Image (cartoon, rainbow, N blue to C red):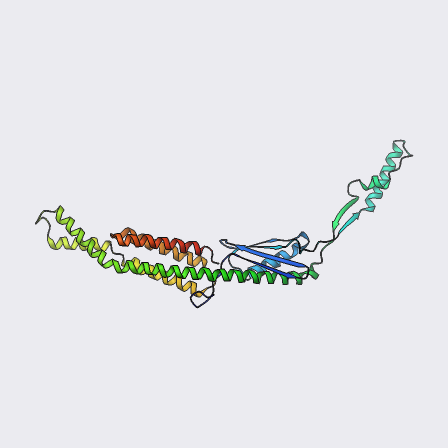
Length: 296
């Protein structure tokens, strides 16, 4: 289903099967950093590998796809016995000459003896008619690919729904941090003033200068910019899911940036409530990261 009402996103995992004529082809895909296609075909149909790979890569942009002929549906070529009669005659002639040379002219190699010599008999599989079979192979492959893509899309829709739900939670967490930030900053400044009053003797420091220093230290603990960037990242992540397509790597990068902002907020904010919210937010970011790893 569309993510956020726009495009669709796909998972990298899926399975599809197609049958046409005598052939059944199966495709299964798993997570992979790039797009990779591995074909496991009978030797007599190795010629189909490049065409099948191009077919898959025309639709799959990320993930490892395995393409195989199901064994029960693969055509089994007839096996013919090859007889090298020229070699057999050469063996027979040479053996008779050897018998004459050894004085055993009454001995003559029979057919069974000659047949057992190297190269006389051999098995050879009949060559498959690739041009004849390719239309059925391609049709089966397209059906398998359609099934694979449908499953990847269905799983992608479920992933997008889950991601959007976690995005709402993370947005609420960021909102809670932003709502708490003004009070947290004021409380930090007050704690700082009280400590300085305890450490310094009356008249030792100019009150105006003290207020200025407190303001500087308080400003250094401000997290306004980090919250703005975090909000921007969350918006970009939502937009990427809504746009659909090949968004896995982009979403993964954005989530890393969300984690970076939360780490900075956690290190700067001098407030227990914000620290707790940051921990919760980082937990959500990790869940988002795990799910995004499955997106194409």
